[in-house]
Length: 85
Image 1: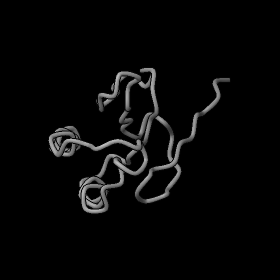
Image 2: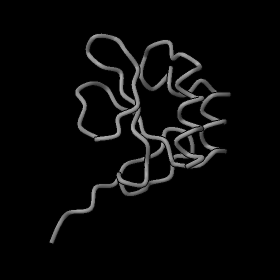
Image 3: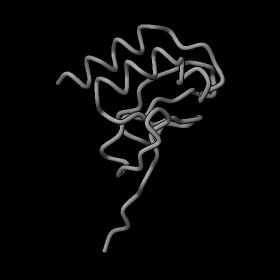
Image 4: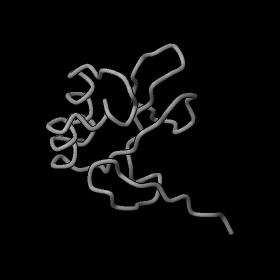
């Protein structure tokens, strides 16, 4: 039996399975990227795959607080495109 990995969204504070969340990572070289594999090195933050959660994260600047780095607004735009699929 495979263990189910649970993570918490930084905006809604809801716990979900890792596969139901989007991971955003601050890499060791200081870039902020969306981690589709869930295995990139660096500090990660999870967002639930909902448009309202991503808009709230943008409004609160939640990714910048969670990752301790300035986040380019293009990251939020990309996240909205991912959720829109």
